[in-house]
Image 1: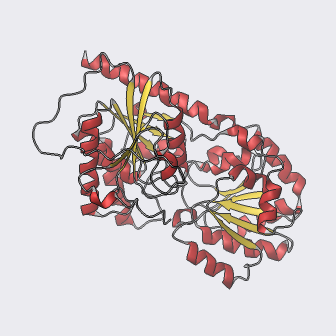
Image 2 (image 1 turned 180 degrees about the horizontal axis):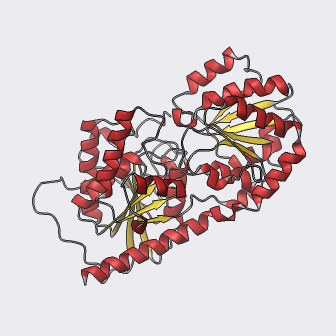
Image 3 (image 1 turned 90 degrees about the vertical axis):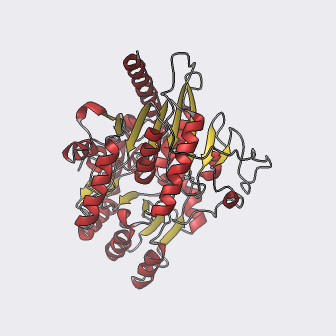
Length: 444
């Protein structure tokens, strides 16, 4: 997905990251506050490494989160929420990420948080740019001297863990939001990514997985053992979804969707992993069986042009809306009748508990962590990835029998407590303190 253009002053700051301190905003976000003048980090040299940080008299644990891009995804949203809600009496959080992405302004505005933007952090593999990004990360970490570095996503996970060890950070944690290698990619590429993950694992003290399926996959791949991985579910704020009744009417009115028409939606980034073209194909087949149905795709990304072309080819222009990214997801969930997710692989998609919290039935592909959220026939429907006919049949079945869909949604709403985002934050806090207590004990 193409995010906003980089902030205009970043190219003059080649030796440094762009830094904002709590309450400061980058230019162009509608806030009149001026950003703090960027600070120059010391250049990295290959001289002697710094000694380990003496933490015996530190009043708070300094935790630096490193994320590749501030996109509207589950890993990004959960990291933002975690940094915002860590107990400031016990923790001093910092965040390092790219300035490109729809969450960049919100991250820059975090209160009581040091936020550093590194323009060289990009998702594709670009060796020279990636090396520059690592050098920036090393310099930032040597200056900030965090007790813990907590990395997220594949690129930031690899570069951040290497940089943390070069900067002699005492504790390194990596959250797995789904692995970068999977059965849908060419074998050579899959082996390469798995090798990178195994190499980075040797620099990692603790792993967090959002799904048991990722724990099994990581153990099997030799990335970690069950002794240094912990399950912490990807959380959502439950109350906004539980209290969203009636908000969907405005979403339907905005898009010209009749108030009583059956509405099928998918909320996802338009990228190969999510297989949005399967949603378009499914919509065409459902429409043949349920002529009054409407469809909604919420999200954006690299496959937008292909999705639009498929919509035209299948004659769905009037019935399939492309809404782009939206922040009113509780209202979207209230508007729809069935949520669909066509992913080819996942970590644990938080859009599923969001639908469950609103009491909406789900039809999703049975990949990775999804069956840990949806129980077939009890809280939703599961189909094999790529099974467009099977997905169309399940959606049609729910639209023709809305009472059955209501029962599935109500059952799902009773099972969603495991995904409370505040519990997610508290569990991470306990993990941070446990790891620091262990590190202090080893240092003693």
